[in-house]
Image (tube, rainbow, N blue to C red):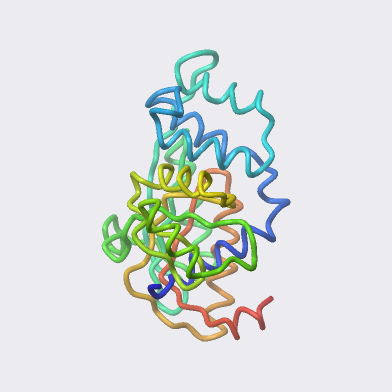
Amino acid sequence: MSGHNKWSTIKHKKAKTDAARSQSWTKVVRELIVAAQSGADPEFNSALRLAIQKAKACNMPKDNIERAIKRGSGEGEQVHYDQITYEGHAAGGVAILIETLTDNRNRTVASVRSLLAKNGGQMGEAGCVAWQFKTLGQINLEGDNLDPDEVMMAALDAGAEDVNEDGTIITDPKDVTKVAAALEAAGYKIESMEIAKVASNLITVDEKAAASILKLCGILEDDDDVQNVYTNADISDEIMEKLG
């Protein structure tokens, strides 16, 4: 198994404890609308399959999912969202990528810039940190006592590229839904799957910087226009336990 991206682990742990936040379906609706613009049939649209999975994971009603897909495919009230990624730095000099979906560019850039400035971060120019991240498919399985060797064999047989130390299955971005389907056919239950930005090299940070980074990421993720936040912060398990 390869070394894991600490921030991916943190995001995964946070996802389990941020249930209240996930009940706000605004972000998922936007993902459904944007994904459906490339086709309303999830069988032929992997981005839409991912968005539907995410919608089901946060208990979005079927009617809401279908309504969002119809809006994206040209039925009903129309809305256009721009996909914009902002780059910058957080405490400790770590890189930060902020993916957004917005119907108002001016509002979003002003909000992101302000949130960064007020919480120990700084907006950077386009391209200043993006080169430090690569795009990968990531799958997490349900269950706390899965056999690592069995998961590794099943994942590789399903077409995955690797399995991280934390159990996250890594795939080529275009293969994430195909691998997930193969794992389900093999008897595993999918807890989550996504296409994510993963840092190539991590920066170890101390407790003070870690607290600042976690706070900043949480505040950014509370913004309706922000879909995902990624950093190359390497926060030790000991510090994570101290910070709760």
